[in-house]
Amino acid sequence: LKPLAQIACRCRPGHSHISASSNMAMEAASVADARRLYEYGFEGWDIEQASYLTNYVIMAIGIALAFLTYDVMKGSALSPWSLLSQFGLFALLEGVGYGFGGVSHHILDTYYEQGSSMSYRMGQPQSEWMFAWMMALITIPFASASCAGTAFAYAGFSSAWTKLTKGVALAVSLFELYLAISNKVMQSGTVSLYFAAFTSAVAICVVFARGKDEAGQLQVFLGNVSRLIGFAITVLAPRSCRMAGDARQGCPYAAEFNHNAIYHCFIAASLVLCYLGVMAKDKKEKELDYLRMARNEQNPSQRGCLGCG
Image 1 (cartoon, rainbow, N blue to C red):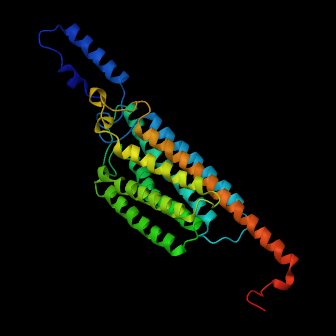
Image 2 (tube, one colour):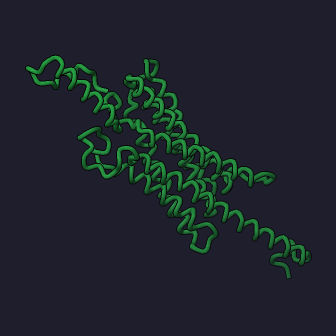
């Protein structure tokens, strides 16, 4: 909240002490009741509860889907670049990364409730949030790379494409970490966001090119479209949506459930859609493998005789 001295200076000269005190109390209460995104002392940072709670929703969904995926993988000798491996890693890293993001914003909200302002430098009071933020900056680019890796594995691309994307993710993570520890944390997160949007766009193209008859294609396609919509919502939100009080006029999103919260909902939905598509694809491949095995058992003389005769 703004210091009371700033509130008091708005009182007109000539008012009585009682009137000035009354105005101060009323304005302080008004500011407290009109709690908004990007408050004084938190410029550029979202401290709305809906935003970090939806971060936690992504965390819960991502970790749960990762465990479900690895449960399906039990007993299978799968490559780390296989479809299930890449999706399981994607879901896990996405959940953990957004979870750390939620923790960082939750800590900022705690500072706000305590009447403190955030610090932008490591080691200073009210800088604890930066540890969680840096973990998010490190993790999320690798989640985005695994999103593209899932699409490459789905479409049968060489694992070299996935490895290349992971290399780019490493560079993005290191750059974001550099910004955080070099007192440029206000600039952090942007490159990671655009890299995530790029990997989703690549995934859409790769999955679409595979053909509409491929099992699970629609779900994986829509999952990545959902991610792109979420990124577009947060990037294209009007400047007024990042303001507080009267300056927020013209923003199409409610302050209590702002553009970041809506963006997080699309990310959560994308994880579920991609999971459904990956499971459909895996089920179809297992059915085909079973049919091939049954055919070979019925015709043992044909094993290893392709091209004979």
